Length: 92
Image (cartoon, rainbow, N blue to C red; front, side, top):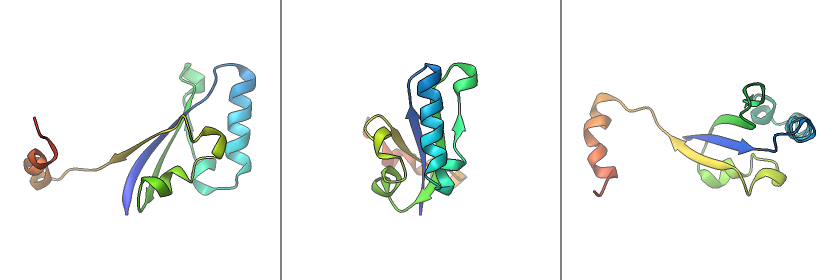
């Protein structure tokens, strides 16, 4: 399985925040009900870290209303050996 950081922005008004949170909580999805939110600090986004097979699977965790604006980033934890081998990831 791969690990992904999902970032889901929403509007900054009270109604937009309330609606986004409600949609996440009402899905019943374990991932969505455990999202972290930045609203209290003025960063109107939800973040989730999920382990799924691919980006497409990560995308389908997101409620349809937010899929087009969500950002999905594969994240990894590098060991010493992998750190040395990162040159394989870059072409500059």
